[in-house]
Image (cartoon, helix red, strand yellow):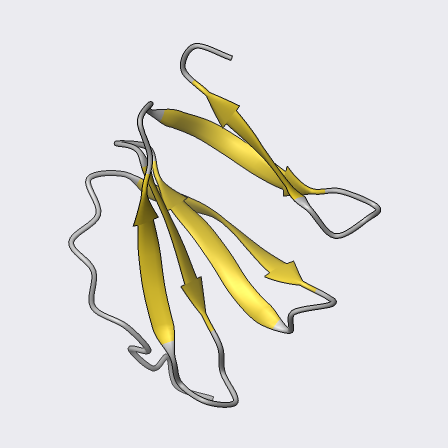
Length: 72
């Protein structure tokens, strides 16, 4: 198996890739206040600009995202 480039975003510090079991897509962050996603079936992808830097995130039992932002 060879690595494959799936999206090409210029992240300052890209990290914390997590698979979302309900949405069946991959989420990850750039610590400079962006949350990204990728759907491997449709190849769709995008990002959300946030108002604070991120330290990480988790997927909760109800499938919502809990973001660990700089100021709460």
